[in-house]
Image (cartoon, rainbow, N blue to C red; front, side, top):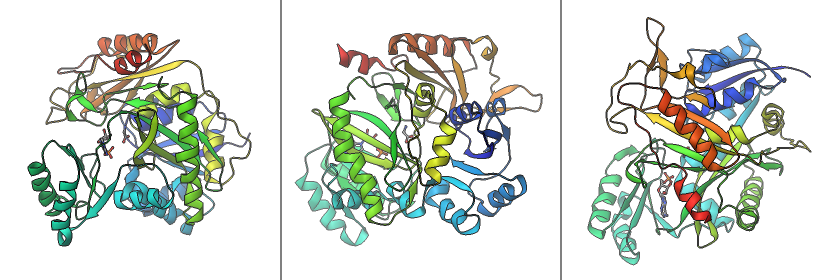
Length: 430
Ligand code: AMP
Ligand code: GLY
């Protein structure tokens, strides 16, 4: 098998899980992670490089004979890294959409228009700017509470406000259009609130109509148990999702995935990478809450454990525009990720806390997110979300117990984790 040297861009738990998976492939030559974190050297070499500095990334790729670039997070994609390489080094396989495709995440207004154009089920909406704020107020009056307001552009996962009353909604619309999220909220999407349970569906697309559906997952966004308190970057994830059964997934494929793939082709938008469908199950009917143009975090930390196939040839084939007959085999086992976070997160939190106990963990894989090494070489915290413990099991319960055991064994001052990960989907089944 021809080996490919691979550069993975990003530094979170998602990139740890991708690095773990990529490093197992016989098709992987050298693996570099830029910038990586305190855990990624287990699987490759960390490179101090900003994924947004395209000329620096290009230089590294040239100097090291990299054959494939896997883009972990959305920022470089929205900024056009695919197009940059397509122009400068078309021989390199870049896993990710073109800038036009990345607008599915980079602009919620674009994503909504795309869904309307292709008849993809999503909440009713309208978009407003400072010039049309009065129309925005009137539209809010047409809707029932709670009110959903979304900054059009990227806002580090914080750009969605869900407000219980009309006065707050109008005030927030004014604040958003006034620059609450900088230029990202110069346009605001207001949409109908949908009630249901969410899940994340990941599709690997080759841009020519070929695609594979990855294991379905569900993440846990809020800091508090019972999904209370402020949003975080994700406190855990489970896969599979019991309600995403064959009947539901057939609807997802026919009503959402195929029209998305076909819509991209019909609009001449090159998309050779992962499509993340944030779905909500409204009384058995899937609807799209959002598109993202990369894998989910922390969903990837569970999903990678359930992919039995070698992901490297699949990513390479997708990036090269031809998935052909390559299979993506999914394990029938369950996988659960529990995130250990710093005390205070998602508010302010201390950094540099020494992490202990990791070497005693055997039944789980630790995907580092916010970790680094201090001057003495000790593993220390460097972010809000510190380490994801991921485990497989015969069912969600078994996988969960292994991940809980792991986050209980590892330790750092102020450690917190949610003890109710997976509870809702397990209860849903009975
Ligand atoms: P997003 O940043 O688009 O993922 O939105 C953040 C979260 O807000 C989603 O994961 C949902 O939980 C919630 N949300 C977004 N849009 C809606 C909607 N139309 N109805 C209900 N909840 C929503
Ligand atoms: N887990 C949600 C996200 O990655 O955006």
